[in-house]
Amino acid sequence: MITWRRLDERDFPLLTEWLEQPHVARWWNHETSAEAIERDFGPVVRGEEPSEDLLVFLDGRPLGLVQRTMLADYPEYVAELTPIVAVPEGAMTVDYLIGDPQQVGRGLGPRMIATVVERTWAEVPASTCVLVPVSAANRASWRALEKAGLRRVAEGELKPDNPIDDRAHYVYRIDRPTRPDQDRDRQPA
View 1 (cartoon, rainbow, N blue to C red):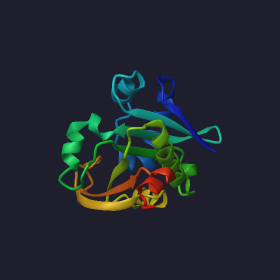
View 2: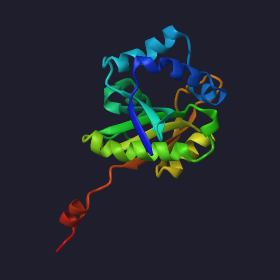
View 3: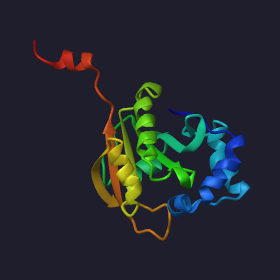
């Protein structure tokens, strides 16, 4: 079973360990000093930033991290995205990693993404869709999105997380499902 809770400061050593793993470091390209982890994750943990950092568990054991964000809370990022894809009101985004290298390649990434997206509809009532930009070079990541039910809706240039990558990105999207009673209300009698 996949569950999660908000990341807190006691998780920073585990997060550091994960960010240092080669399969994570390649794409996240994140500094791992205690100061850098505090600087970049501390504000969310303390509620000073509006996004969520979720520590994800598989059957009670730490599996990975999902960052869930309402895009409107980061207008500079919306401005970067809008030349290549429409960003509707209520659009969310997620970023994710599987921390333990022994768990990579087992289909857990798509499960984790799908579970978080599914629960987003209930946990974030204002959410209308999830848009996820991903480096075109990160095949494992965009394949996980596809397996989780997202569809590719755009291609374009965005600033890469890792400067060794080029700017080519794909953008994936999944919309909030309509409720059956909403569909019934729209159909002619």
